[in-house]
Amino acid sequence: MLHAEVWRKGALHGSHEALNEVVVSKSDIARMGEFAVELDGKKVARFRADGVIVSTPTGSTAYTLAANGPILTPDVDAMVVTPICPHLLTLRPIVVRGDALLTVRVEGVPSEALLTVDGQQPVELYRGDEVRCKRSIYTVELVRLSAGGFFEALRSKLSWGEL
Image: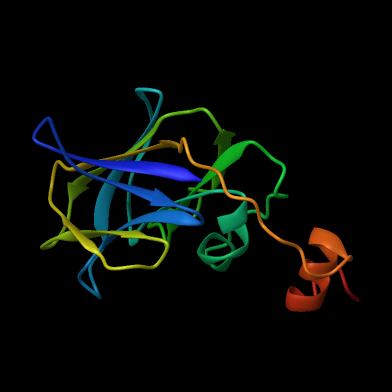
């Protein structure tokens, strides 16, 4: 799971727990936002896009997959950072270690940006706000109802690896 904190003007503004993903996106339909991503305090990228998805391995087969992100097996200790419709085609999703601190900063938006955690009620974000994501102290045990496992589910639901 992920723990996400919203920091505004140097103060903690709120915190959230996510099973699948944390999404920072612009709210205007036809305009891009500007976002910056840092990994453990070091600049990864600054770019224009519709937003950024930070996902767990469980979330890699949800919104991240729809945004052309990679599929991670559930046992991988990692997070995925996926730009949503980036302005530059060279900006690709990245996989980072699970104990990293990822920061997504809203650098510029037409009006406001939104934080959405696991597709629930959005939280308003403004220029300069930071969403800091790290491994949650909480974990979850998932029940598997079929004996086929992860790849059987991918083949069944996504026709993955089928000719």
